[in-house]
Length: 436
View 1: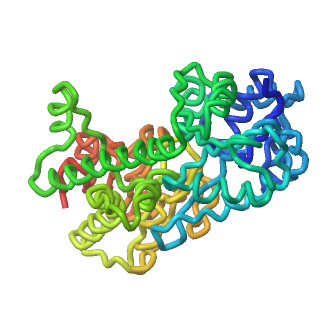
View 2: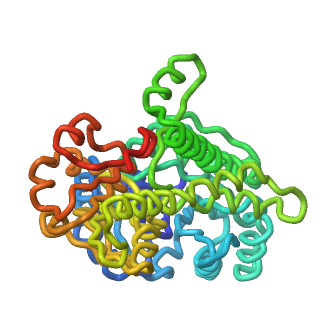
C-alpha cells in the first residue's frame, strides 16, 4: 500500500490534492519553488485569495497532525512511493505553442530522486502524446530505469475550478491513464482516497485527449454564447430572453456570454489539443471558437468607444473604471485576464483607466485598487468585466453620484436593465442590445 506521496506544484490544483490526500491518512509532502508559499502552508495559512470553502480548516488539520508539509527541496521526497505533478503548462508568450519548460524541470528533479517501484502521475493538462514523447524518455534518461518495469507512469487530468476546488476534487469522476495494469491499480488506490466519484482506467493517450476535449468543448460552448449575444445586439433582441426559451428544450444548454474567457486552462487547452495532432489534422472549428472568445475584450472596447463618441468625449480625455481583474467571480486568479487585455487596449489609446478588484492577485501589467469608491470617482464609463457579488450589491444611485458621466458597459449581466434606466444611466449590457 502506498504511504508516501509527493505533490509537485502547490497551486489551485496541487494544494487541494495534497491536503485532501493527507486528510485521508496518507503522508504527503508538497513541493514548490515559491518559498513564500511554502512558508505560509507550513504555518497553516492558505496562500491563495478568494472564496474557497473548507480548505483553510483542512489545511490546519493536516499540518497539526503532521500528515502534510511543504518544501522546495525535491530530495526531501526521495522516499516517495507516488509522485503527482501539478505544475502549470502555459503557452509561450504571444504564441499558441505549448511551453513545457516547468513540466520538464519537475520531471528532471523527480528523475533524480525516483526510487524503484514508485509511480509518477501527471495531473497537469498536456498536449496529447506528451507523456509518451516527453515525460517517459526524460524520466528514463535521468533515473536510469525503465518505465513500466522499474516504475509506473500515468496521467490523471485534474478537474477542479477555483471556488469549488475541494467539492470538485471530492465528487467528480476521474480518468486514470496508466502505462500498464499494475500502475492502474496503484493509481486507483491513491485516487480512491481523494474522490467518491467513479474511477475509470484507460490508456495514457486517451486520458490526455479527455482533458483537452473537456476544456475545448466548454470553450466552444462559450464561444457560441458570445457570438449569439453579439448577434442579438446587432438585431435588437434580448439574448437572455432567447436563451431562456431555447434552454427549455431538452438537451439545449446555451451558456452565458461575457467579456472574454480567462484562467489558466481554457484559453490554452484548445491549442494543446491542436498541438497533439499538429501536421496530421487541423481542428479548425475548435480553433475558430477560441478566436471568438479572444475577440470579446475588443468587442467591449468598441462598445466603450461608441459610448464616448455619443457623449462627445475623446478617448484620450476619458476616465474609465474596470470592475474586476480576476478571470472568475470570487477568485483571485488573474491568469489570462480578459480585463487586462481590455486595460492594455484602452491605455494604448490614451485613456485614463482604473481597475478595481478586492480579490485579485497582483498582475504583471495592470495595477489595481481594492478601494471601490476611489476607483469610481470622476469616471466617465464604468465597465463590469467580472461578476463579483460586491458589484451586484452596489447602490447605482450612489455610483452615479460619484461618476463624471453616468455610462455603464456591463459585460456580465450584473446590473438590472430596468434599474439602470430608472437611474438615468446610458448603458450597454452585452446580449441585451446596445443603447449607444
